[in-house]
Amino acid sequence: MAPGGLCGRTGSNSHRTGIIKAMFPRLKQLVKKATVMLFMKGQPDAPRCGFSKTTVAILGETGVKYDTFDILSDNEVRQGLKTFSNWPTYPQLYVNGELIGGLDIIKELKESGELESTLKGDN
Image (cartoon, rainbow, N blue to C red):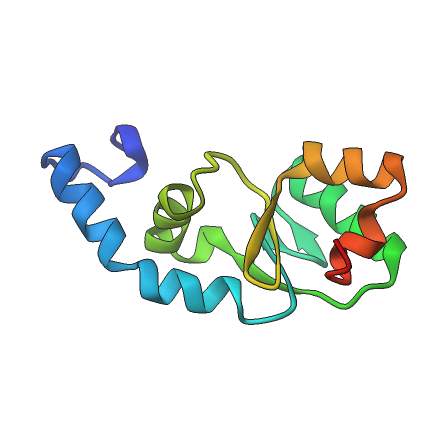
């Protein structure tokens, strides 16, 4: 696979950025698909990385209902969401269409006792 995950495609970065920005309406719709939306590698019952597995475990402890999107199933979403959110890594957690952050932020919210209220949109 070529750098940037484009499977050998060549082209300018501005061309790729233009393509990704054209996806913003789709990405905006995806992040709002559910009140709590997790973009992860794999599915909750079969996470494909340790960070996603830990995130699912933490969310499971809260009892808050959430939906997921497997970013490994759609490379355009996987690459585009990084630009859309200005967050380079996965998993990415959204509440009411707003980026909360990745596993590090989720852990901080849990430790401070703010995770459940954040997931419920109280913050």
